[in-house]
Structures are given as C-alpha cells and as structure tokens.
Image (tube, rainbow, N blue to C red; front, side):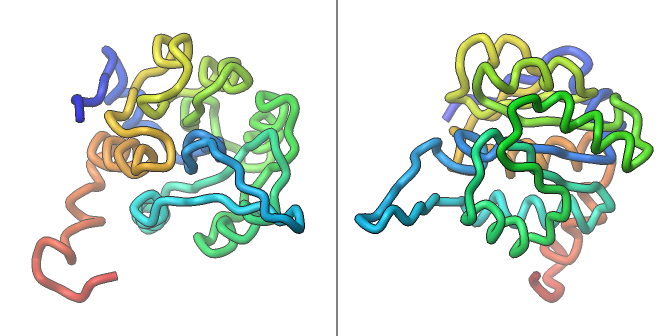
Amino acid sequence: MSDPVVRQGAAAGAARIRLFLTDVDGVLTDGGILFDAAGIESKRFHVRDGHGIKMLQRAGVGVGIITGRTSGVVAIRARELGIDIVRQGVMDKVAAWREILAASGLLPEETAYAGDDIVDLPLLRAVGFSAAPSDAEPYILDAVHFVSSRRGGHGAVREIVEFLLRSRGLWDSVTSKYFSGGAGG
C-alpha cells in the first residue's frame, strides 16, 4: 500500500470542515453492483468506513450522502449509520450540495466531498476539502486535495475521515477511549 497523496493546503482545508459528504459507488463501495436472479441489488460496505463515519459524527462533524443512483441498500446503510442527509438519484450534485448548504447555513469551505468519477468533479472543485480513493479516475486524482492510499470500498473513507479528524485536532478526543483501554464502541 502506498502513502496517501496530501496536496498543499489540504490540512488547512480539512481543519474547517463541519460537513463531510460522500458518493457511494466507488467510494463507500468498490463500485460493483450485484443483482440476484430476482433483481434484488446488494452492495458491499467496509465496516471500518462505517466506524470512521461514526467517529466523525461523535466529533460533531455532520455526514451526508450524495449519489447519482437510487438504491434501497444505500438507504438502509445510511439509517444504520445515522446519516440524515441522503440525496439519491441526483443528476446535479452541485445543486444538491447548494440545497444542503442553504438548509444547514454552512459555508462552502466548511464542506468536504469524496468522489471517484467524472460526475463528482464539479462538486469536488466546489467544496473546501476534496478527497478520492486511490482507484478513482486519473483526472479525479489530479483534482482533489487528498488521495487515500486505499481503494473505494476498502477503507478509503476511513482513511479520509482520520485525516479530517487529525486536521481538525479532534483525533485524540475521539479515539482516547480506545487507546486508554477504556470501553470500546
């Protein structure tokens, strides 16, 4: 595994983040979509990404999903993780982001987005901090502030979250119970 790519200014941008938004296919998953014979869709999510999202929430950072596809599986995973901001079937991700900003009162530079494909590019360029898994399209890798050393669906979001928490100075407070031998969670 190679090291993550951290561009100049990435930590400063990450330090301002109050809302982390992410795509699903190719970021929270490996991009594969499975259908059984009855047409029921399934996706594989990485448990460490989910725990990273929970740590981010415990640190007071909001989390949301903006995805182009609509999937019952995504709604289930979002509910399981306590993610209230879920926009599925979105053709214009920047427009969805602007609606979220208007409802939350957040500034553009207080938001982050993780994406992996061309449809994510306009939003990745608009937010205060942008990130991608290592297997994103090359032009995405060139455009973002942070490139995870991990592939989508294989802990990339967890690595991004850890960078955000460290940049915000929240890592120690969020993880102290784990390192001190206190109760797990």
